[in-house]
Length: 305
Image (cartoon, rainbow, N blue to C red; front, side, top):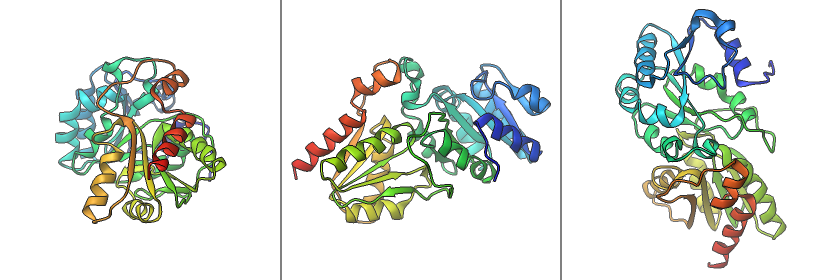
């Protein structure tokens, strides 16, 4: 298997290998800056027109193409929501929706640019799946599988550096399990996986039996894994850079309720508020999402049992 150094390199090679792939952007080239000169007419920049981009992508998909669209996550999922729902979701076209600067990766941007309801919006559209890689390595491992999947996907672009190696086996709907724990299971996705990984080690140092799960796709979600964790751990912790409503906490509640399984759940999310803009390390510290903060909150909740 060829090792790719970046999202851009892998996407370029996929475009060269398969004439169906078209790369599109709404003037958001941060991750694909060098592609125009490398793939020629199969790179389309529509300008700051997210709705136009999705409409055009749907038209290309109807003609056998697989458009990989790029925009800031908040404008992609909010401004173009109706077009995604109507032009992509209803017919189930294989358009890939790549949202950059999602969740806490928006860092110093204010509420207008914070995509922290994006998972909720996209998973609510029938036929559209949701993939949130933990870091750049995780993203590169799953990218070809997702792009070749005939279903439409919303992708939370994530080029952060990994804190631990990932399993090369990537299957949509199957979580990546790093450990199992009888006391607590940390369930997470995307950018906060790294902090959860470090939090798990801090908890083990305190004698806590910790499970650590990178869910990878939130739709389809690994229902079997969630139910198993609920039955085997005293506490489930849903950690996410998203509003509490509609994200992983809601997915977990829906899953447990549907299958009649009871569990104690701690939600570490943004509960009805936007986050304070700052560089990522300061943001995590201020909002309480560092590894130490996560571990402290888990120990406090376990002590209440």
